[in-house]
Image (tube, rainbow, N blue to C red; front, side, top):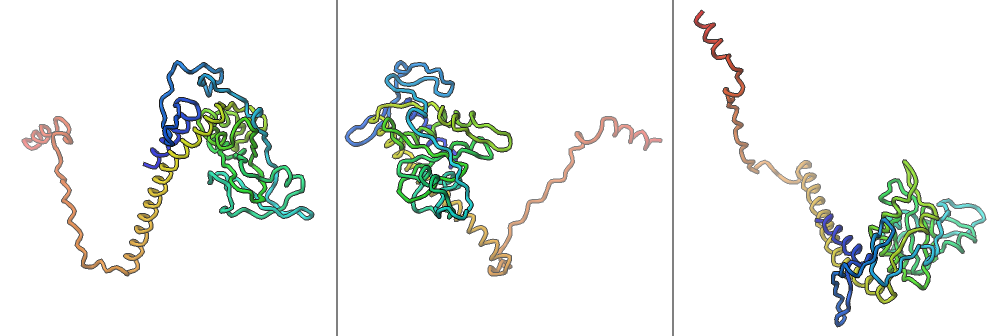
Length: 290
């Protein structure tokens, strides 16, 4: 069920970001309608294929700055102490905020200047052991004096695109597939700065971007809540099972008077017509006569 809910969430993101649905505000309530096929135009990108009329298609380099980080996790003498946003912080969280337990390290003044995160920044996983984990994004929601660390890339948008929309766009399959295919490696995969900048992003108007983000967030929040509740139920069931086994094995629960139902007798009857080779009965009779 969890996998189906995640698939449903991904379909919502894909349809909204690629313009397959038109989102309308009806009295403060967002409603999605299927966009007519006649309103799409072909696009040479093998990932997008078509885009709605009136939408721009831009390379990421034209709507955002991209800076791969080289800040390592070590502490060096003569550098300033900092908090680091690491690979795991991005991979496991949709938002980067003060609730996370950031690693302590040091960085140069130049690194602090270039890679300190500000609200609206998008951080993606630049390197990974599997291509499926390439370009997993998280969005910064607070000002925390945290520095972007190694194996990550910092993306900062211009005024032509909102950071929340770009964050959602990066999670859509056509854009995510571009990053995955562009990653080089055999046992470990990595994205070059050029590959990140070359990503093709569908760009509707700012108003449409806002509506798309609101629609995705509304639908995703409901699905995420169901997923988290289901995961919690699974965790409680596993916890109960472990505790039950422990209590029985250690004798905390007396099981001597518990009646176990009898196991049905196994039918050992052999079908002679199947197991007995042809002619065997005749040969045995012949031997008996002799």
